[in-house]
Amino acid sequence: MKNNVPDILLIYTGGTIGMVKDYKTNALKAFNFERIKEKIPELNLLDCNIETVSFSNPIDSSDMCPEYWIKIAEIIEERYKEIDGFVVLTGTDTMSYTASVMSFMLENLSKPVIFTGSQLPIGDLRTDAKENLITAIQVAATQENGVGKIREVGLYFEYKLYRANRTSKVSAEQFEAFESPNYPHLGISGVHLIFNDQWINKADNGKNLVVRKKFDSNVVILKMFPGISQEIVEYILNFPELDGVVLETYGAGNAPTAAWFINSLKAVLERNIPVINVTQCIGGSVLMGHYESSIQLKQIGIINGKDITTESALAKIKYLLGIDTLYKDFKIEFENSMRGEMS
Ligand code: ASP
Image (cartoon, rainbow, N blue to C red; front, side, top):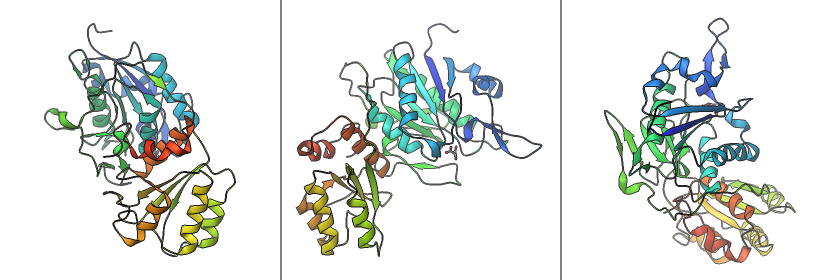
């Protein structure tokens, strides 16, 4: 143990980053993550103490679900007082969902929680895991006036630090797998690790961390596509237990104007079920009423998701329903930024 340096907790949940290639069979297999320092001895050179905790059965992030979100949040909650920064390793496939959810779960967060992973396993010759991991730890260990520089949930990947709830996975091939099209990156790693001070969350209300662990599971993402059938839309929206809908619309929030479509949305709203309009474009914002094809959505009371990502909208609707937000307050709550997830 080094003295007077930040204490960092590395939480390994699974994913490519914790795998090595078995050169006999060519297959990827998980290695014992508790022994990460043997794989990357450079970790010993960092100016911090590193502890690791690993899921006993690491998962592919395709299997990520609320049960595991709670597990990650509880590990953070348990060690929150004595640890200065957290680095969470997950598979990249659903990392933006998990990290967005975490930003809502961890209320009054005032320490760094940095997600990272990799496109190639740690044992691969050309791996991106080493840089991602080492720099994510450095980010989590960076302090200013004796406290963590980052006081929010971040995602570090391929030389860039992002606000996690602004990201989406955009490539299954490039090392630059994530983007944050509607919000500038919080930092960049070159010869120096440079933070973009003006975009980093500075708010600290001094309140204690509260971990929200309840989510509503009866929500759906309904993606518009040309020719979407009335029967299917009605079938989904008539689901008796439905509690919320994220409607992925075209462009600046546009959707079919057909009477059957508007009527089925109206019927959902009459059941006091919130419907959020988000764009299926990777960048840009919903502007309801800008085109004729979104005027009716605005008139009937669809909620404006503005420039939120689908991943974050899903996290936010599950969280707001989980804390029993009343239907009459839902629009105001959703349309206000709570964790810097929308402009
Ligand atoms: N399928 C893997 C996962 O998301 C891919 C990765 O780790 O990047 O768990």
